[in-house]
Length: 116
Image (cartoon, rainbow, N blue to C red; front, side, top):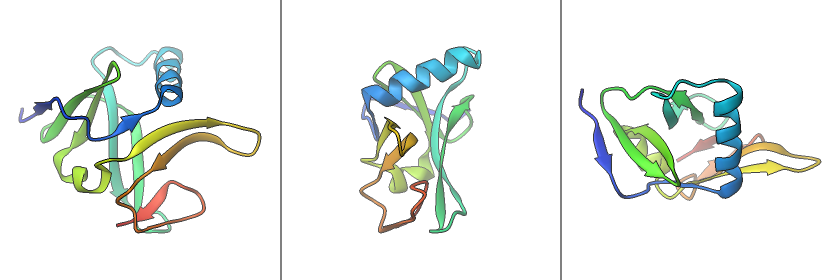
């Protein structure tokens, strides 16, 4: 397996996001060997969509320790995600994870799709 552990945090998880992720992990009984996967995939109205979920470490993943959570991402996704902040909003009009990505040149109204 070709994984890399780094000490540099490529993304930021806000306290609200961490609290929600830990709640989801507990409620869904996510196995201990699963890490938080952050990434991108083709699609969405602006070209790319974000990936956020629990998964096992795979080949070509980078493993990061961010605020007590083990986070994995594919090396190739770093150019799209470096400096991104993942937050959790719990308001009347908007509830869910948000992605503040300085690499996005364009985003759509749903907030989960971008182009770079």
